Amino acid sequence: MELGNINEMLVIACLLAGVGIGALGYHLLNGGARSAQKLRKRLAERDRELAELRSQLSEHFERADNLLSALLASGRSLQEEIHDSAVRLDSPQPSQPDLKQADEQKDDVDAPRDYADGNRGTLSEDFGLKSGQTPPAQPPRY
Image (cartoon, rainbow, N blue to C red):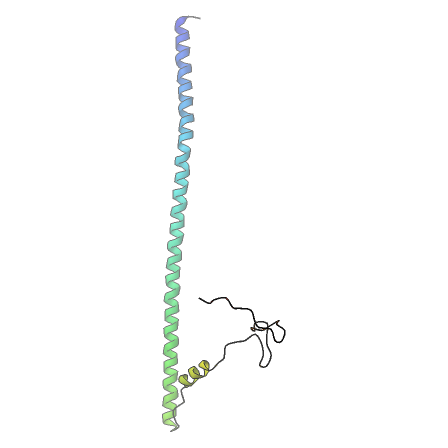
């Protein structure tokens, strides 16, 4: 072999090695960019899904509001119809429930207990004590 051929072979081998090392480096360094691109794509997809869910939610609340308004309007028209019928038939007005009396009855309810009237339960102060024993001292209440 001649010296010139060895130099040409060395140049070609170095060129191929450089291309191989460059391709390997590009593949290794570009892997992070590829995963970042996948993450951006997934994020954009999730943002689109979230926007779609928000629009569906707002449509749902709008529809519910319309139905509630229609229900209230029907209730008012029914109440007016009953009032007009009562006036036309010359009968007394339909009575409204007395809410004040219901509130007063709620206040008269006793707190629940762990025992019935006349019997002492497990939460009583003297449960488990023999007659004549004094209950143990209570810890201070803060």
